[in-house]
Length: 267
Ligand SMILES: Nc1ncnc2c1ncn2[C@@H]1O[C@H](COP(=O)(O)OP(=O)(O)OP(=O)(O)O)[C@@H](O)[C@H]1O
Ligand SMILES: [Mg+2]
Image (cartoon, rainbow, N blue to C red):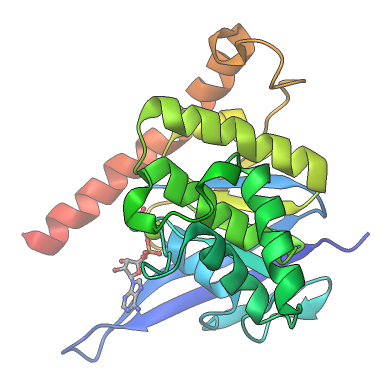
């Protein structure tokens, strides 16, 4: 079976401004994501997580290796991939509805249908009553829900999310996590989700890929087998604690190493 997404020896370097040197952000990334899978990626700050997502989104190109989507190399951005960034990238002069419609304008959906579809997706994220509000009239959690609705509205097969809930309070974050799981279960999209949060990774992921500190490599991929996640308070079960500890341990060494690298760079 071909993977939905396949990283094949992917590396990414950046020039270092003012020097002839180059910074290796990612090195030798091999990772397959199956169709319909919920894959979470964690790693220390600066290890290349956003870089990885940008490559997959087609916003930049690898320095080494290749990324395949349905077996074809990624050559640029496309409507087959929806992106939700960490900062609510909403258009401030447009209403919630207008922001969701924005995603549909590129797809050539007629105007009447655009509004209809946008309303549908606002409903999906429980914002039906807020269609006419502008971003500044919405809370952070609501804005992020608009951003999610926007990326879902044009029905991409793959959803790329870069720490989408990081800026939210714990309660809002947990309710959006549940909403996202619900949407994922309903739509069978392939999700690649980046987070700093170990609990978030265990709660959401079917698999969690832990990256090393820079240059980012895949250190380990952990299968999360928690059964039904929306049934009870899964976060307080021994199984959950087991996975949390496992990922914490994998990450801990890498974060320590990242701090060492930082100290060397400064000193
Ligand atoms: N356009 C760029 N030009 C030069 N260096 C870059 C560029 N983008 C990223 N980098 C460098 O690549 C490394 C990885 O950055 P990236 O943003 O992918 O990390 P991250 O894992 O997403 O970090 P965080 O968890 O803090 O968001 C960093 O050292 C960063 O400074
Ligand atoms: Mg990042």
